[in-house]
Image (tube, rainbow, N blue to C red; front, side):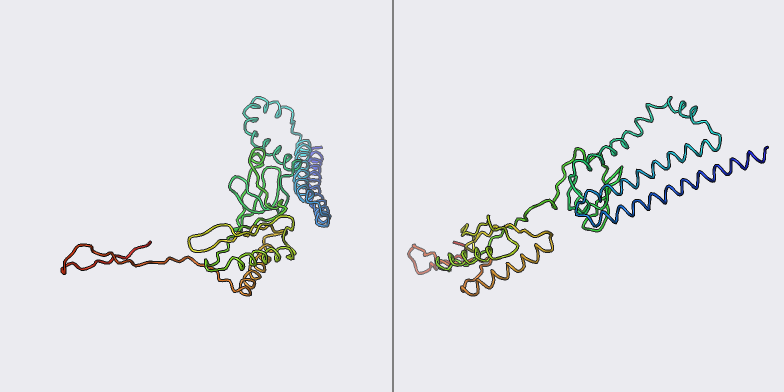
Length: 287
């Protein structure tokens, strides 16, 4: 009977551990299948749900595994749980942050302030969302580091999502020489407007191109445009093309771009006092 009891206990423990292992592997399989379907769908919400589903299922497997393992070892959990009730207040304070982080993850799923791959800024942390877990969200910065942000912070913190922009604003002052005739300035501005009208990646219903101010060494033309580029690389590429077109336009109109310069005038200060011994003095300065 003693050997039989030992064998039964060993078998029960072995079966319980095998079920836990099977639950972990089954969870990985379910997560992999769900992840493959998530990659094919356009909705990015499932990209957030798949990691949470995997971690939640594993937590459930662990809880049930511990219960059945204790039963296999003839361990009574009721007295243990009753003993834990003595320190329930302290335990509550200990898991306070965990509960806040959990509800923070629920808020991220329901409110959807960002999605996987979005470019965000939260509490001074800037980067792309790498993953969202039950406790924290991982953001990969542009230095290729990973910053872990507790989900409880996301409930109250301001999240600036750059990926949700419909347009990408670009404001530029183009300085041209003061000797440029007014007719060429008007033609130059109208030429830039025409470049914006035919450009495939610019907002057509709102842009501004005007002679804007008299600068210290140039006449400044304001170019205020919104790009409809889907990402930063496309924006840089199209801005590069647009700036080259402006340079070609200036060359066709024979307009010179201005650069910071200063003109120094020399003036002779005459000495009004009579006398051959007085020599007229000279002084150099900016006028």
